[in-house]
Length: 428
Image (cartoon, rainbow, N blue to C red):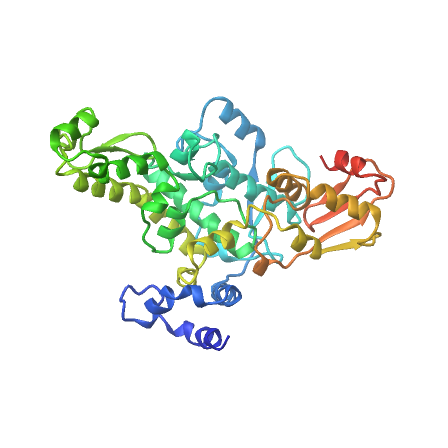
């Protein structure tokens, strides 16, 4: 506790971006695991308040029909797509990022309307729009990001994660990656927990940490198995060049397949040079380095966008997994915590309908719970516990058939169902 109190007082004086191992900023960053989560959040909140701007909300108009038509035509590339992310990028992507630090009406940066759709944006519409923009980034509707190799091959861990598409390196794509970083900053400022489905390698690089073999394994298990087989082949009885070439069928050259499946040379002429037993370690080291850095230009663009909205310095206090939860929320749901942060109107927490409600919620999958949060609050994830400031409210809707939500206020009008089966049918 005393250490954290002293750190909180001295941090504003330190350069947390320093790479000098003898500097105090570097040492504090290396000891970030000793800093309590609420202290880190307090420091980050102070930095965001110090850089907050003022003014009117940015207005964005989105068109669901245009987005659907574009996808139907196969327009999924950065140059052709008209998904909601691209529509928003076209309207505010080149705005002075200072305006993206303006929290309007408490927790909003945008005021959103949809073509041909009624609805006044009192918070719920903009939350839903930002969530759907982020969903576009991690979907088949847009190729700026792509499923990681583990996802495509259905092997290993992180089969739900996406990585930047290394093939997209045009000025337009880089600008869109930067806008994705700005959305990450907006997620932090608004506590929206937008669902950025990114692996540890990306989160680490954003805050200047080195990635390692385990981070590569977390996105491409098959590639790591090959590298391990090459590095340990001597233990399996391969100890001279002829048997090595036989084992690997004389097909291994100084190339590698990136996360996008594209074969790239490790050096000019590498496609014509066979990997031998004696230079296999050199080959493995080059592949590992290339794979760990294959997204560097795209991540640098995301980092620029994030830094334009939120100061990077306090983010360096967070381990990558705490940063992920701060930006993107937790994809899992702590129902006991959620229950303790719910208030009731027209119900008592011990009423049968309330008990039915939480019993059904406890039986839902994470995906179904995410769908309920979107129904109730216009977002797909709950904020982290240290960022939680809005409790859910459940009101008694009497004998009505179906529940009604007020996404602007995280409120659900729940019918007074008489059985758990009725509750389940009403919620699903």
